[in-house]
Image: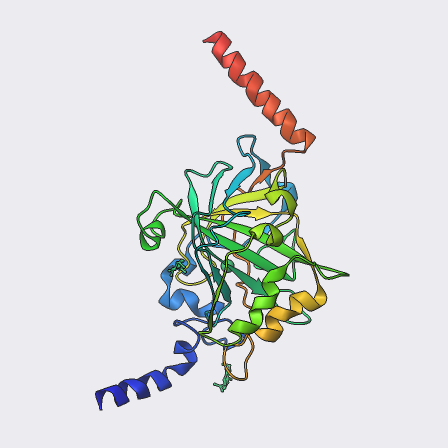
Length: 306
Ligand SMILES: *[C@@H]1O[C@H](CO)[C@@H](O)[C@H](O)[C@H]1NC(C)=O
Ligand SMILES: *[C@@H]1O[C@H](CO)[C@@H](O)[C@H](O)[C@H]1NC(C)=O
Ligand SMILES: [Zn+2]
């Protein structure tokens, strides 16, 4: 009887429960969509929320920023397994093994946890961050945890707990031959589906040379889903990854939330900057080199005159 009651209760809670948690995107219902999140998750109403619109002209060059060092992305440990997972909001690839990022003024080494995507519909874009007001067709988030913290739960309590690397996607005329991730989507069509895959080089998913000398934007923000913890150091690469329209459409076409409903437009609207600074790393730019030079001259001068 007790288990029957539990069963009935879970049926009644279906609109929320089947969306993995007590929140959703508007495609399921505006009653649990982003506009309502802060009711149950107060952090979603914080002042350092993500995503944001990145206004490139207002981004502050920071000469202390450097390229990010990606480790284990090209040669992941193939004796382990990775898991692909439909969580009802997106598709997640759980990254197993020693895959890390460091450098780029990150305060420590961050271990890759998983990556996931935000997309639109067959006809509308779905990135979370926008750049100069432009929303891209899709956005990938590679979520890393600060190794100084014991657990994900602990990391989520600190402003430097997570480092998320974001890549935009753009529509190109031809298929990207090596973006082999898409072939796996059919194995996790439905909510809760899980599929084990052998680790593969993530080089294929990221613009060549693992983002060396590429422009990125840096700011302090939050998870873009409840519980919206303001625990994320964001790195948003400017250069988008090109995929064909068909490849991009595989996401909203294949991935389902329930038998009849596809996962579409799973992005949070942009949030207020509230006075935060967005920094830009652009090793190639003249202004950036000039700033670096002035910084070096400044330090020399300080040393000389002290
Ligand atoms: C699937 O989800 C949609 C959106 O919440 C809902 O309208 C529909 O009734 C659901 N279908 C099933 C079979 O549960
Ligand atoms: C990592 O790989 C090992 C070895 O295959 C496996 O036992 C473990 O469950 C994997 N962990 C995750 C989080 O997928
Ligand atoms: Zn995300």
